[in-house]
Image 1: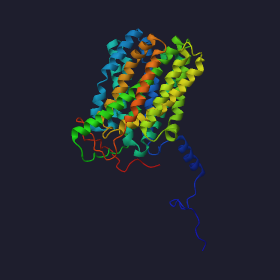
Image 2: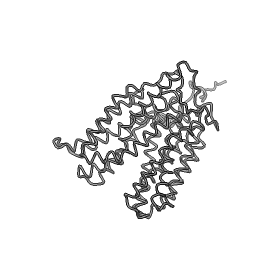
Image 3: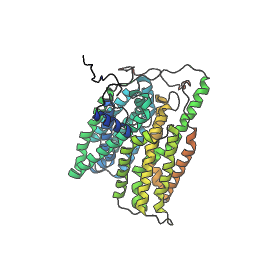
Image 4: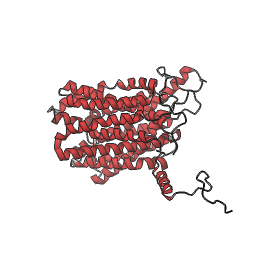
Length: 452
């Protein structure tokens, strides 16, 4: 009788690799992508939310100044008032997340954001604009307060940084696609397309909410028994986390430079055409979208704080490169300096962003809970609000001043980063007095995410 020599797929010794699958697996490894099988709803929710943001967030001022006929100063004041009023939502979101978990908060955040953008259609007066932006910014603040913790519960524990890098790439791709769709609509139909964009894009947030509502999650690990005095543990962990928040501020402000400073600097100080800033932003988007996952997987140091230090070193160099064309004695050509600066800036973003997000949920025991996440998100919210006033004031003092100040801040952060040592495994949980032991137990998957 002839023995059966066919391959048994359950036996790795006799299984025959499928060429297509082998090539796909090799490509996934080269690109540094996490295992996405079983995470389709999570990926789709992140992508759709980002497309909506790319379509609508940059168009608020344009909508109210063209469709409603209000002055830019009036609209700007109303927008700022609404965003400031939404700051306390960060702490409210932290409390809600401690009680219900990050998934329900992410769902509610997307629904509130959709309601805020639809409220644009009903807003005619400054106070109504402020209320609409209060809703939009409340949704944005709540979403980012919850999203980092949701990643820790919706993805495998050993791939957290890979997922932070991947979701960062998804966000850049989605924002770029949304901005391209909006630009195409405006090019074809003029500012009359703004109302249609609101009607078409706001429901995207509802679709994202539906995706997030069905994302399977794992329960957070239980806190180990205490072995040190309660106050001493809590004070040490709080100091460590506050240092992380302070160290993140220069990175937060640098991200705001893309929207606030670069266009003004290129046109007023360097005398370039308005499209120069758009070209640099496109370069940044392309680099971050395509290189974040592979560089994070293959070049980033294993320790997050070492990766952050590398990022801040690159960011300091980028500030010098941005300032170089404005130096009267340098004689450096403008465009090569700006392109080099944006490449360094993009590499710094690629290394810093996933590592900072990783530390924000792993630096101390309980870091992924609402109290800590609301504090970390507050640094982003306040930085984004303060950046326009800060950088325009610095630019008015001189074309080199913003880059010098920001470069010094990045250098200080670089010197402080080595102190961001994570708490060793087995260290007791910190003692947030506002932490609630309730977790989101609806559709909790205890066996972990589906393996690829």
